[in-house]
Image 1 (cartoon, rainbow, N blue to C red):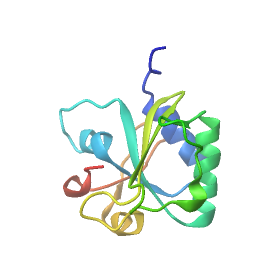
Image 2 (cartoon, rainbow, N blue to C red):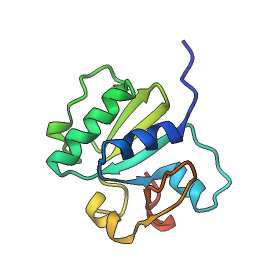
Image 3 (cartoon, rainbow, N blue to C red):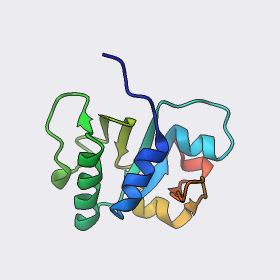
Length: 135
C-alpha cells in the first residue's frame, strides 16, 4: 500500500478548524523559512494544555491519523522523556508530534519566538524560528 500524498494544507486546516495550539517545527518549518529541502510530512510541537490536546485528538481523528508503530494513540499521557516523538500516518500524509524539539522546552518555549506565517488558503500557523526548527 502506498503512502498518502502529503497535503500540509489539509492538516493545517484541520488543526485550525478545531483550534488546537501548536508550533510548526521540522522540515516544513525550515521550508517556510526558505530552505530548499523537501519534506513528506509535518512536525508539530503541541500545546500540552489538556483542552488543546483534546482538540488535537479530534483533528487527528478527523484526519484518520494512526501511529506507525500500531500502538493506540493516547494524548492524555504524553511524556517527552519516555516518548519524545510520536510518528503518525494520516489521510493527508505523515505527522510527527514532537514534544520537546532539540534545544527547547516544548510548545510554550517555542511559542514565545514563533511567528504566524501566512501560507495561503487562509492558513497562518505559528512557525518556529529557523534556529529551533529541527523537529
